[in-house]
Image (cartoon, rainbow, N blue to C red; front, side):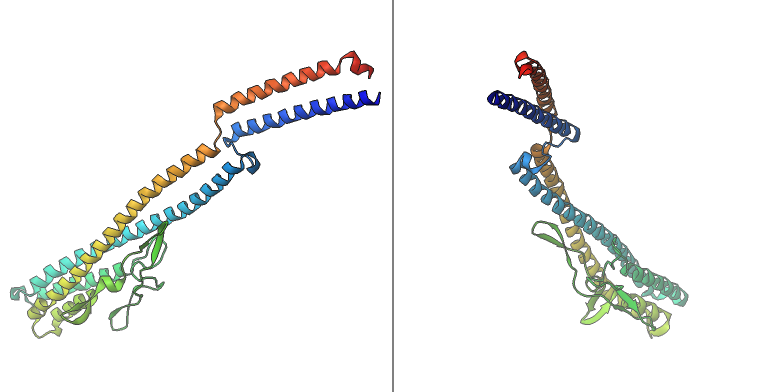
Amino acid sequence: MSQVSNSTGAFFERSLGQMGDLRSSIERLQSEIATGERIQRGSDDPVGAARLRALTRLERRGETEEENAARLGQDLSEASNQIEGIVSILQRARELSVAAANDPVGENGRAAIAEELEQMAEEMFARSNTLSITGAPLFAGTAGDPAFVRDASGVVTYNGNNQNGTVPVAPGTEIERGVTGEQLFEFDDNGTPSSNFAVLTGLAAALRGSAVDPAQASQDALSGIDSALDNANRSQTVIGTRLAWVESIQQNQQDRAIDVAEQRSEIGDTDIADTIVRLQQTLTALEASQASFTRVSSLTLFNAL
């Protein structure tokens, strides 16, 4: 009698265990369908789970690099816009200098030109202190203070540093942020240190009477304006090259992100059609197990035991 009882208990335990396993499988399959994720726990597929963790790390690094590239692209675009405006100012200053070098312009004409030059110098100063999208000075290098400052006498000097700083935008790839104010606004004019501001304000002062010969002073100012234009054009070329590089990197980032997403989908996404088939099979197996258990457990032998 003891042997029969033990066999009966084993039957019940085995049957209930099998049905419990089937119910667990059903719950897991239903969860896979609901979430779209094949791997719910690492134990479901240890190798696949490890690959998914590696892909997650790649995605996070890629997202950081994408954000860096986007901000850098915006900063470079803004720098390009500002330099374009500076070039326009200098081109207009050259036109005015040529006009002022012409004696028939007269005193009143030179005064009008001086006033326009002073306004242009103010615009130049404002552009020199443009902020990046993150609020940092665009042309101050890595310094956090305004790129240029003006003293009580109106003299403008560079207040930043000579370090552009780099931004990581891809594995092993860093791109310089832009150009410094010193690179863009300062130069040597026939061996003498000068700047865009000094040329504009100096010419304006000469036209207002500080020079004995305003016409000659206007003629002399042309070399400084041309040097400033050369500087600005070089800087624009540098910015344009880096901007094109960033755009290329961003395209590569998009391609890489798509590749990672495809790998993640291949490893971790649920195959809905296949999972539904397996779910139906498991439901059928559970139903059959329950029916079989009910029939067998209701036999007279079991009742007698």
